[in-house]
Image: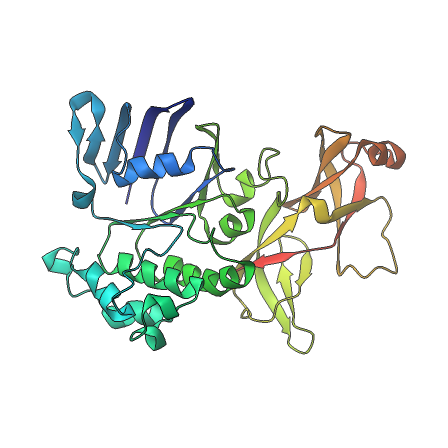
Length: 353
């Protein structure tokens, strides 16, 4: 599937002027609250008509303001999952799911109900009412209802924003299965670095109504303008070994290994590791007597002033790049400069399957 989006719209004092292309997979619209992500996805869905814009799916024009083309939302065949599940409270889970099937074209009305139920792990919930479900369970049912409408594109607008950390951890593996086991392309709206690092194939970073950067999660989430709380490096590796007693996974990177406190992954599995820059220390000699499991050897590739007396350091470890945010005073004391050999001491690593 090829998706082309262009939209210009004035919403009070806010101006949306953004666009991107997608060739399938999971495309994340990423940015802080108020950056224009939801405004853009509403244009895609047909919930909002821009002042100027164009929308094409596999060559079919769904929106072209110049030629006065505007295909209404119910004819676009897009599924939409909101922050809240928006299930019908008087219907059971099974009935809510079957409601989605009414919107599928006749040729695809017999979408495999059992497969969707198994994919999302909701078989035990079918006879319950929404009032008896947790937040994560409601979202899984909402996703199932959207999938059973046989959408050619699934739009997910901050689907985990209303959930606590425990519920997010519950639903993320199901979103991974959705990505890996269905052919439905997804536009995923989020301001969460861990979510985007874990799910996205392509990231469109937005700021003040405009697209600021486009690329892979590794490329975009390492930019200085990414969410400061979780910005850092996203590296791809292979699960080499599992230490079940200690619940540790050893991940092989390009020229190094990294140990991650996780035991649910399988050996041989391709994974991403997210290393927040705030959790990386820089040493000029290999430190000893530390609790940190990961110390990577590398050379300084860049030194970038980052405001408020802070400096962002890029450390090249083989073909991988690790980021650290340290004080300008530390740069002076350690006499850091380009190509200087250093050690990246990593305190925290999140495994993004």
